[in-house]
Image 1 (cartoon, helix red, strand yellow):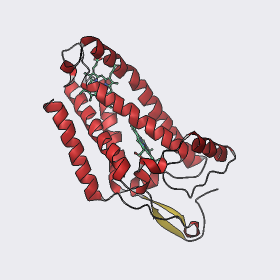
Image 2 (tube, rainbow, N blue to C red):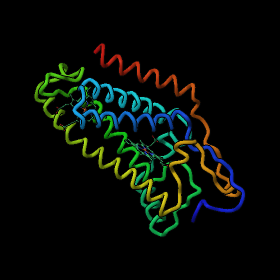
Image 3 (cartoon, rainbow, N blue to C red):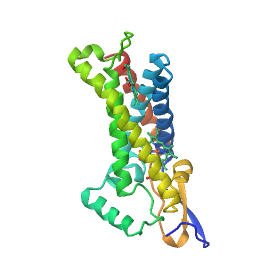
Image 4 (cartoon, protein in one colour):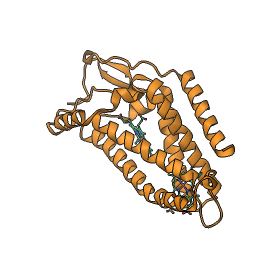
Length: 228
Ligand code: HEM
Ligand code: HEM
């Protein structure tokens, strides 16, 4: 099946603006966190990138309950049965490119990405290096626990890099094998679908609400970094 049809198409709203901004800002912040390590930049820059990831993830957590339709966890997180059913349809070559939002398998990778990044950002708060740099919460825990988190921060980077690689490969798979372009909706917010498919616009996810949630998330991170 393909979205390339010759009949009339309609732009269906899929992702709200705050969710899309979250995604592309997250990409920039995660790339910055890795680049500052790979280029041996000032450790403070690395921490700043890490705080940005943390604030964005706090925003996403809340947005998963009050954001636009497809951003809500209850609307895309499926149990094992849902995932097996989706795998079955994929194997039978019956992927439906007129569907919108995360599919059951994509949802799993989304959760894995969010959780592994959350672990990385939180463990970073307790991390330290040999040049006397340390995360703002390092003093709150024992040395042995800090050692464990230090090691976990190092190992988890490979999980994140693996998941990001898988994420990009999956998107390319849908684009070129299943002829389903997921990237355009993540940029413009909507997907051009055959008018007769009858898919409805995703509701909710107001930009002002997003701005308030993000401001609160930044405030919480600021408090944790400066006041705890
Ligand atoms: C550090 C790199 C990246 C990270 C951490 C990341 C993370 C994520 C997350 C967490 C989501 C789920 C959105 C949500 O519901 O919260 C997502 C979805 C998505 N990402 Fe990324 N992403 C990265 C790079 C990219 C790149 C390079 C592209 C494009 C080539 C891309 C395209 C997409 C698309 C199209 C979706 C929606 C998938 C769908 O329709 O189900 N991502 N990404
Ligand atoms: C999701 C965000 C983050 C990512 C992807 C990330 C990634 C990394 C990576 C790849 C390393 C090098 C590990 C190694 O090979 O030794 C590292 C080290 C470090 N990170 Fe992060 N980090 C993040 C967040 C943070 C945060 C929020 C802080 C502190 C506020 C932090 C503090 C540190 C410190 C102090 C080191 C140096 C440890 C050493 O020298 O081995 N990180 N981080």
